[in-house]
Length: 142
Picture 1 (tube, rainbow, N blue to C red):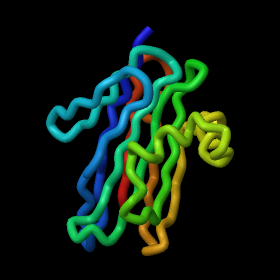
Picture 2: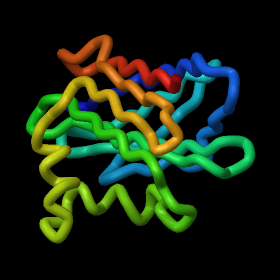
Picture 3: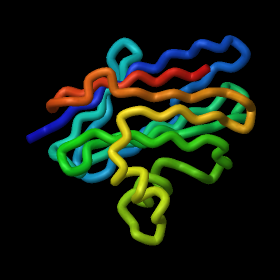
Picture 4: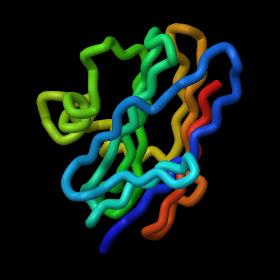
């Protein structure tokens, strides 16, 4: 059975603007963008995606990994990325035992998380709809 996750991004601080610069997919799925709402569609449980953000100047970066594992949603936020950390490189780490921290984040099946960056910015994510096959995630960049 397929799953979708609608991700709405809210930016509350006017001292930096973040753009989505890369989207990644694990297994079969697709990203779509409708009026600024990013939707990840996956063929089944076990799929995931990633959104990588940077400031307009490219000085700050973070990513959000999201998906469904064992029929439950999960999310992970990682800040302080260097330029060579991409979705293509990072998303497979959530499925490789050589990266136990990433696998543990997926297995934890968190439905919310709040992370402070080294630049004292707060990145918060929370599933607004965390049950069923049509999930919704709010992303707040503060």
